Amino acid sequence: MKRFFSGLLTVLLLAVLLGGWIMLPWFAVLGLAIAIALWLFLTRSGRLAREAAKIGIAGLPQRWGASLVIVVGIAGVVGVLVAMLAMGEGFKATLASTGSTGSAILLRAGSQAETNSVIRRDQVPLLATLPGIARGTDGRPLASPELSQVVNLPTMAEGTDANVQFRGVGPAGWMIRPQLEIVQGRRFTPGMREIVVGAGTHQQFRGLEVGNQLKLANQLWTVVGRFKSGDSHDSELWADADVLGPAYQRSAFQSVTVKLDGKDGLARLKAALAADPRLKLDIETTRDYYGRQSEGLTRLIRILGTVIGGIMAIGAVFGALNTMYAAVAGRAREIATLRALGFRGLPVVAAVMLETMLLALLGGLLGAALAWLLFNGYTVSTLGQNFSQVVFQFRVSPELLWTGLKWALGIGLVGGLFPALRAARVPVSEALRAA
Image (cartoon, rainbow, N blue to C red):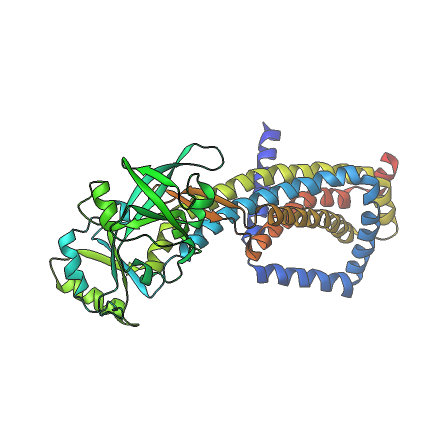
């Protein structure tokens, strides 16, 4: 029982050390690294530690098998962790880049997304007269009443059905979103059963080539164009809202997207909505709306990535512990000789730690490089807030690479600490006899 509690206490201590290290901000890590470098080069004990570390590092080729256990284990932790977090960052970046502060979306009061919002058709003419909405060259308000329908299409990879967002937009929808660019074909003709497809949807699903026909709602729709927007709209199909609504027996819209008139357009439009009891609607910029849609899934992915990375990190820590304990035992005569020559406990501890941290750094760099090469820009799709697929790319940012390296160094720090302390505590005579 005593050994059990001792082991449990050790595991808890390792977890606290690793967690505390990972939570350190970058400037604290940089300051610590500078302090260690100054100690290594400006103090006598630091120079002794550096010389002892050189001896241990020079012997790494003779222990390449054991060293690879640490390097490969830590590389796996960093690679998986960075890949998981890159998925969350890519999804977040895709939705965060959707919309702008110059446009706004109106939903029914209390609705969190388009899927549970209803805007009656008789409310749309009232909205068009409100101040704060920009007008086009023809003098008409830039307001696009829209609705969203989830449809099933076969995926490119497996041919199984997956959800796709089929968006109906008004004539002003194109002018409100100037980032949309037709890259093949043309726009749909108002009043016709024609579809334009986003670049991401075209890449992920079958049968969306320009000129093809799709059977949706028991009607044939012709694909007449393909567009690219660089945001979540790339995951959608677009058609005329006045054609899409009757096809799916939808008598109302779900949202109205508007172009704001100047910097105070949002404030003026909010005030006008509050003053009209017929319009019980909420309004926010499209940038804020789409950014909010990514919060839940991004948080889930981050939690999963941290948990999975933490479990793998624990395994890597114990692998490093076993390897370094074996390395210290195999170098007992060498360490005892150093102690006999005047190397005190601190230089010996620092030397073993430096050796472990070097292996951890190599593993971290290897894992980060693999994550960058294999996953950065990799295109996938996942369910969004409206239960349709959102196509996005993994985003391996410098911040994520730094996070991975910090995890690697944390594993090396924890994995080398106890073996280093043991090397410094073994009596010289006992070590020489054992060797």
